[in-house]
Image (cartoon, rainbow, N blue to C red; front, side, top):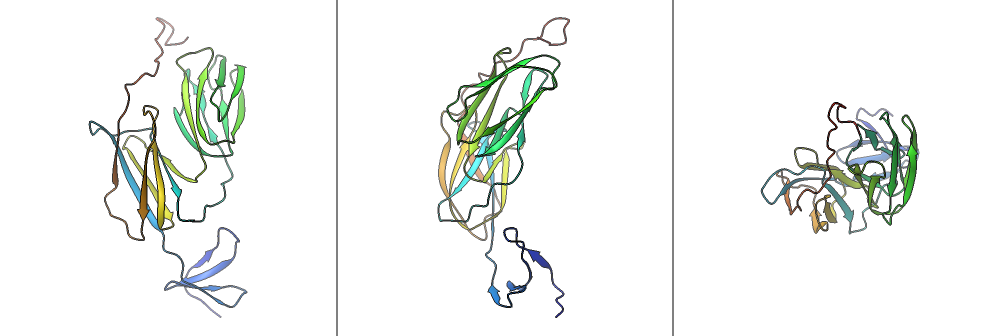
Length: 234
């Protein structure tokens, strides 16, 4: 039998099936499976109290109606030590994700965290060295350097697979979400506690992004003072 419409492969079981006009035919099973579930998309715009765009804010969506949560993807994240700073400054990962910490500087560092979700230490971290730390508990992990006080980074560990970090345009976007209710949480290093609210996603959502306003505390991030004649080196 010949079919002239697209073959789709199931991401879970690997079974192939054809789709046309919302009807799927299971290969090998010879039965009518039925219509595919329509998916939702969601977009948000994050600003501060003055209406300025906010970067490095992490927005997460946790399902409230029993939506199927996909298995964790294989892979990890990376936080480099470069120019005596951590890069990126904010990282969001799913629980159980390994994070690599390469030292791309020409000097030693001393990575540590005393945060409850992940206490760890990598002392006297030589140039060119790279270590992997697995973040196996949800929560906020603050990372510092015992040699360079101004070096700091944040790792937000989340149980949900649906999260994204704003860039300079203050936006995040999600696609292929199951319709239903979600708990939205929005975090930033300069908030006292995350913004939290319930949102309901349908199969057709508005074209305009949801505008979310964060009240940010004053910037208290330490900045390195350059050393005269040393190009800013410590």
